[in-house]
Image (cartoon, rainbow, N blue to C red):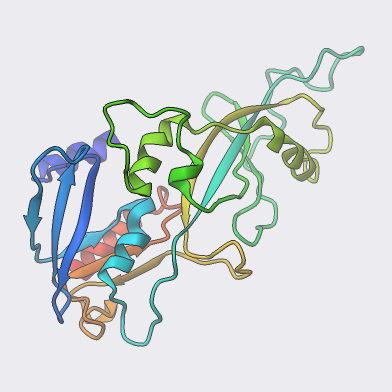
Length: 272
């Protein structure tokens, strides 16, 4: 990631972290006028009217796309955003046995990734192995109806304003994400379908993250990435009043893996 950041800055990109974007106006052809506010809102705002606005804002992409209010001709408006927390547990050593374990605790039980059949809203609790040989299981799907409220730490720093937008609260709380140990029960049941020798007490709460969902908790059909708009007619931009807009919405796992391919798609649309 640092290498990609360095490449971007070498080519003239400027990064404004922790900035809010407010859409002011969208022209009939699809050119956006917007305001950006950095930090806690104490810095002066910046008004922009870019030739092309590329919405790749992750958790904020769907709310921002709804602000813009444009889609290629014939497609319905975007639904309200949904968010799913994904928890991970790592594999710890088995409890001290009365007889030697079948495998030394230092050896992983797999030599490849293990993916069960997908769930409605996720890929299922799968097994991955990092470069150090540590096995992790996850993520599950824990729906979060209001990420700002759900993740709000017990006490906010006194310097913060008393009222902040939910997405700002979400960003503040990202570092406080924790795994509820009680979720291990469903992990044991799922993992034992392909790793039946997993023993009680071996799962250790590891880390969690939030992923954006286009589908709601009640939808039975899994949603894919939505990539649309731009000057290129094949991207639906001109027909839908999106000539100056490219939306990349619902980019959850494996969005990072697909990021370079998504960037190539955006480049093709941007070049017209």
